[in-house]
Length: 502
Image (cartoon, rainbow, N blue to C red; front, side, top):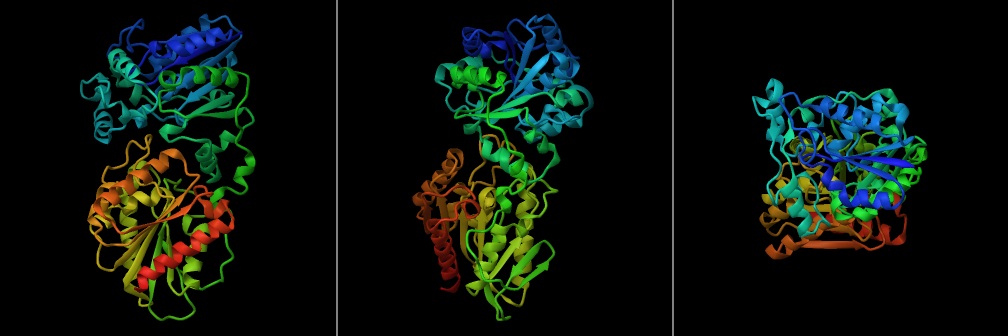
């Protein structure tokens, strides 16, 4: 018989697992919902010394009491930290770890990264001990839970229950670093990704493809994944589905991230069309793709997405899609520009925005560029960097384009500065032409940001043209080598260059 030990995230206790535990027991398994020290209902009260190690020991004591030979530890969000700590102390008892929407904690890393308020994070780390005498963090007020994760799928009664039964989180549980042993890191693991909160198997495969060694372990044979089309608290929004997934996870089922994804990840696949080769010239963090002569030409600056690992190689300006766009613009008589910016974390949008400003200044200063005719073209997660330019477009900015853009922070992008929300700045764009390429097979949470932007653009009468590619995916230039996709790229490039020349 399998025994599931269910460990909840911040502010919650064993009560949150009631329906899931019932479903597991109906399947013939044992279920042990845990209330960690200080987290309310039947758990022990917190004191000034309650920290992550306290919660680890809570779980170790329970593991020692469970007689079933197969123990599956299930951690939701913060709950994954004590789960990993306890697994390292009792690895011989653990058959599998299940990670529900909880990221990938590393050894020595505290759970502080889960806190969505940058000012609060800074305060918690600035003062030794429990934040200058504050021993706990109050749970979110009713109506504020979405700042900690998507509440999609939770009915009104569930939200009321979440607010009523939540408990303050001891600060020490968030600031004490995780001790992750090699034994725990090697245990079989299943990730349950909540797509409405911005997680998906596609994203995991993309991250693995960047070659970051932290994520290489996700290709191990014992690692599997499931997706649930719901928000961050599936035990409230989809308890029956979650219980069924946990049973399958315990059996070793689920999607496996093939090691082959590292051989040709999406961002390194060929561009969807053969483009005539044109001269390339590198300058600092930018690269020029030029026509064959030095006559001053209008320029299109391509801004890649992210966040991306800082040590990803090759860097984006050498990715086939970016090179393909740059070369294609050059073949059509413009100057194509690709660049590397430093969007490596959700807190980096300000730094990346400055990198784009610096790149544009270099481009406009080049004597072979008509500095009064420049377009900015954003891709994917770089889309939010368009916000400042839309708010107050300079006269030389003749067009803004975006392909499958993310135009607002996704639910789990908690630390993105709210300044980077183009739907709130597009009203300042005036008559600036905007060309938006929209893919029909986009992830729903990204499409929601596009819909929000288009609604705001319509409301303020923005000059926007949508290029629809109904059968295409996100990053379609590397995935969908179809006539429809090629036609969309040709039309979008022709339209942008037309605005530059008009």
